[in-house]
Amino acid sequence: MKSIEEYVRSIPDFPEPGIIFRDVTSVLQDAEGLHMAVDLMQEKLKDVEFDVIVGPESRGFIFGVPIAYNMNKPFIPIRKKGKLPCETASITYELEYGTAEIEIHKDAVKKGQRVVVIDDLMATGGTNEAIVKLVEGLGGEVVKCVFLMELAGLGGRRRLSGYDVDSVIIYPGK
Image (cartoon, rainbow, N blue to C red; front, side, top):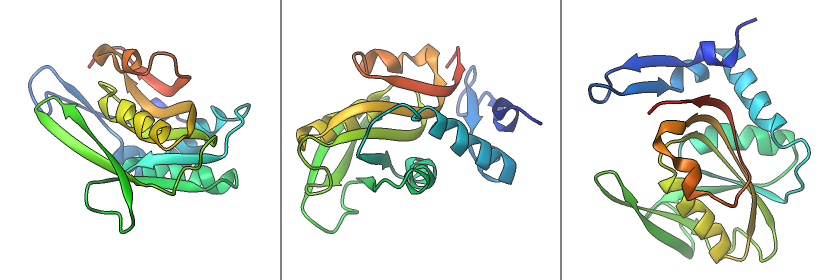
């Protein structure tokens, strides 16, 4: 049986020289790889008490929904600005070259709910930090953040200092 790392395609010098792009699509397009990824991420939650799972579009949806389904928990989408139809809370955050804005329905997380964040990748941690702020702004408590992959060389964990962060695969570089 292959390890989960063997399902991840590594593409050197993309999007620029010196970067190794870790491609999650190679995990998704293999039934065994996808099954293993969901199971390994879900395993990180076996002893965690929580009420809801949140995940950002689009890859947070891919992994968060089956985990929520398997664990009989609701899934709450975090979307790019302008994609949610009801009243939203939003946050703008810094990207490497510019800014982005994400939103959540204001009624999606109730005060005091224990929330797990699920996503495919933690790099610099900017998106993940913004998600945590959105959830906490609605009165939720982030009890764990789970990622399939982490690029440790980009220092994303520093932005989530004080939170329980776990990754299935940790790459030492960028």
